[in-house]
Picture 1 (cartoon, rainbow, N blue to C red):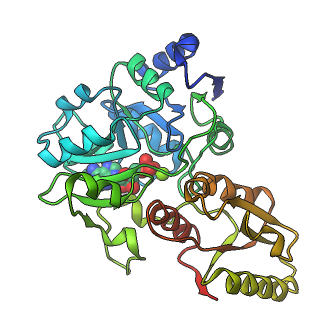
Picture 2 (picture 1 turned 45 degrees about the horizontal axis):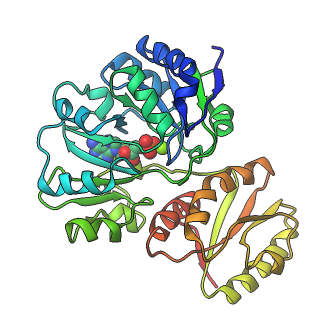
Picture 3 (picture 1 turned 90 degrees about the vertical axis):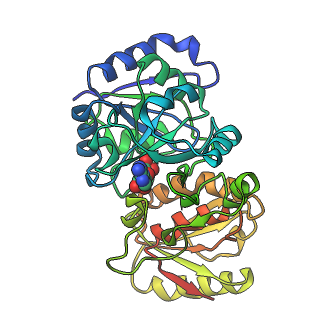
Length: 352
Ligand code: AMP
Ligand code: MG
């Protein structure tokens, strides 16, 4: 299959209407179109068409029990697809939509089992990115879209990442530049009594609690699950975000971390492996290593979060086999950042 790649202006998508009409035609005919959002690139299909949705799983190599997020372009579009919207859910919709928050509701029969991974709930997101909304609007139905990467690889924050993973496996990529937040959406289950955070993201637990009071947090957000334990978001059980390189997180006070990483790099060099270090602006000049990748400013966790997946992909691009990284503070967006980094490292953490 020849994958069509077209650039669009994500601030004024209307000027590229022809591209969106072409994408809408593909998706109406049951095809797959990758599109930009403010979190990561999504791989879209008609959420109401089981055959189209199955193609997403095939292109990504995604396990079929891992449900998809359904994207809408206006709040009013949600009503045919969900059963009850609680008062707390309404408050969250008011506060954070459009934006990087996905909410889980009880679903109606219009959502096929293929889209919901066989669950009786459905994940809904109303993205902020104008190109994403323009695309959904032109399609005329909700778009099911997981991240547009090969399953298990770091999520794509650039059209070039989508092309690398899925070229010739999907019909089209809408290139709308880089994804602003760079981490997948926050997922909150509002289908039960007490809302529960299933996946942390750039809308933080603290921000949510400011609006609706205390929420629960699924265990999979905080720690590695034991064998047999099930996360409430099925996708959280899979190895994720992994580059080919082995990633090792070194935690502790920053001076000890730098010393420890320098010690480990020196020790490993005899093994004749290509070693790398993920460093910050503050520490980049303190490492003795040929491959130093700068992830951002330690004092700007949003910047580090938005660079994370690009940096993990760069580890592969450089052909690294072992990469040491500093750990980051876990408050605010740091919870989401460290959740993704720990998964990329397979929970391989050393204390300095
Ligand atoms: P992705 O779009 O690749 O970021 O993955 C979507 C995430 O949403 C996965 O972790 C899914 O398991 C989760 N998800 C989607 N639908 C539901 C649902 N109905 N209940 C719980 N988690 C869901
Ligand atoms: Mg994903």
